[in-house]
Image (cartoon, rainbow, N blue to C red; front, side, top):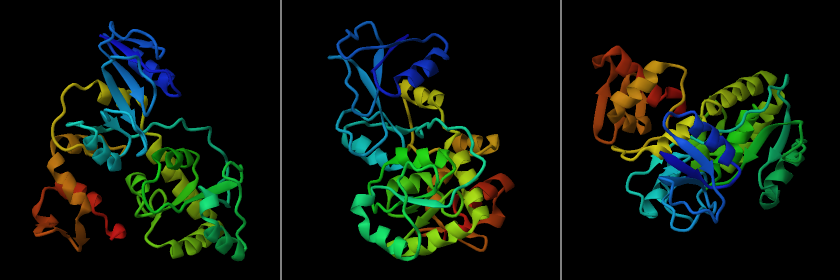
Length: 302
């Protein structure tokens, strides 16, 4: 099998992942190359591909115009994939190159797209919290005030640097990436941002805890996983965002018993999980299934 790769910033990473697979020959193409000898071409976002090429595309953000969206980087992009005509889209989390670890977790604060959030900047500065440039090395707390249709890449990039990301629950990109109070903060109201920032600035242990979990959660993604998803020719069932864990048992659970995934949006209350008109009593379940459903709807997220 010969696979072409559209030139772009991720082309080398995709090429490396492909060359590690058996019976696969990979080549980075120019936009003018004849793709005829290739089984298909892999591309990211809006990268140009050779004319008449059979393309499988990996999408990382919601503004992409190209089709089809074969594989997407986060669950909230699945609806866009379906809108482009992809009948079996799949999710593979976006890999981020993690920089070397730094010894401290800085208290500096930055706001993503600060020019469109001047009121928030003024409110924080009134509380004696200076706002730094987003690339300042003293930044350890990144605020993404976007209410919807955010971007996955800058969030995951900041998390890979052990920065604490504060984002809104209505931001689907953030909700796909962050678990509140575990690897970052997801807030329901903009008015909650100031209190969250003040807490983090004053508490270096909390910054260290959230930063460690943030880096751990995003660095488990890799291009081998993305390439595997893009090479699949048939897919069944409903695509889901893979949950990261060091436990092989959790991955086996997701594969074998995927019907339990809808319970992630259920309500948990004292040993009972409720989803619409369905109720499960965890005491009636086996140990593994009970544990996984408890993780799917943790108490602290209610």
